[in-house]
Length: 302
Image 1: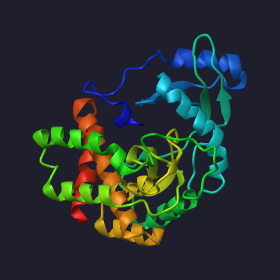
Image 2: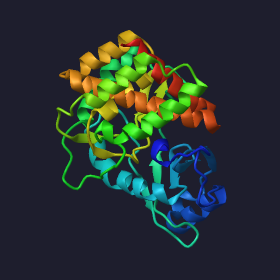
Image 3: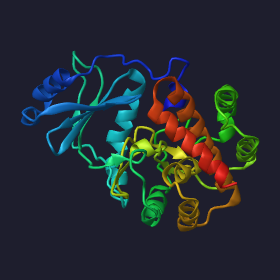
C-alpha cells in the first residue's frame, strides 16, 4: 500500500479493472491448470492489489491498477533472493502469472501465510528481538539495479510539503497534531542521513505484518521494496509495538543507531501516521485507528 503518493480527497483509489473469482479462475485455467480446481475466494482489496485465497495453501495477488503493476514485478524479481536472508517468513512467489487479453498485468500465486494483521492483534513484547533481527538482516547494501522508489527511503525533506499540508488539514479535524509532534517532525527534517543506503521493505505498517497469539508469523506486501534510508523501515517500531518499553528495547536490539537516524525514524513514523490517519478518516476507519496510534506513540516517546 502506498496511500500517500496516490491519495487525494476521494480516499482509496478506484480499481482500473474488475477483478473477481471468475477472472482468477480463468487465469489459472489458462496458465496454471493444475491449480484451477482449488476453491477461490476474495480475502482483501487494498490500495494496489486484490488478494484471493486459493485452497488452503496458496493466495493469488493481482494488481488492481497500472501504478501497482510495476510493484508486483519488483516482488517477483527480488523477494526470492532476499527471503533466504530473513528470519521471518515472506511470501515468495510460487507461480508467476502473465498478462492476457482479459487481464493486462503480471500477477502471482503465493504461499498462504497464516496470521492476523498486526493492527488486529497485538504484537507481544517477546517479539522485539526477532523483529530487530529481521530489520538488521534486511538492511544490507542493495545491488546497483535495485528498484528505485520516489517516496520511500528518500530524504524526508523531499516529503515535507506533502506532510505539512496534511498536518494542517488534520489540525482542524483532530487534536493529534500537537506542538510536540511538530517539533519532532522538524527535528527529523534537519537530521542528516548519516548511514549508507540499504534494502528496505518500504511499507512496514501493521497491515503488512502477520501475527498469531502475539507472535510475528510473516511480513507481506513487498511492492515498495527499494534501496534507501533505513529510517523508513525503522519507523515500524512505533507502528508495531504499543508499549514504550518494547520500543526502547527494539531500538537497543537493532543496535548502533545514531541520534540522527533515530530522529529520521520518528519522522518517518509521523509521515506514516499522518497519511494513514488522513486517508483513513475519508473512507477507511481501520486505517485511521492505525494512524492515530502511531502519532500518539511518537508523542509519548518524546
